[in-house]
Image 1 (tube, rainbow, N blue to C red):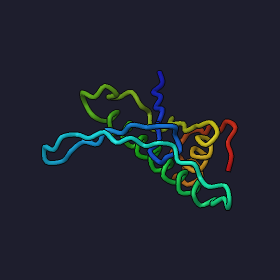
Image 2: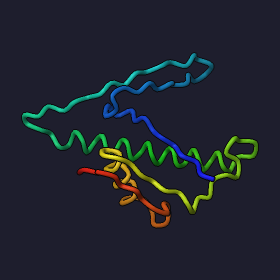
Image 3: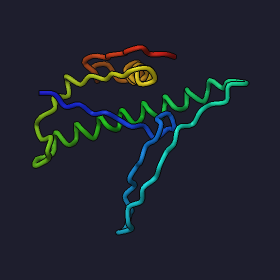
Image 4: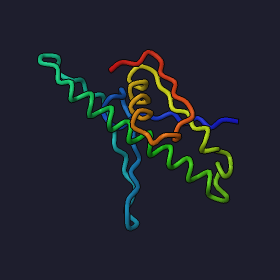
Length: 121
């Protein structure tokens, strides 16, 4: 079988993302909404997109770590289901740019394969 994780990124590149933030010390959880942030085109700041893709890459790595941790946790719904030697990262458009950055900066052997569809940099 396969485990597939689809991410809604909290960097402002998704049309809208709701993120539930858990409260510490018994504080209630809060919902934060991230809306799409469009860069100014005149002049176009390429650093804007670079910061976003780096943020997104950190989120992908965090998701990978969480999934592998759940697979190694007895009683978890993913217990024993994920083979860390067969993890694949992929994406479409800006997701492909994200997956490309993740794969290019990851330690060797962290990802079995990379799928980039209509990526741009």
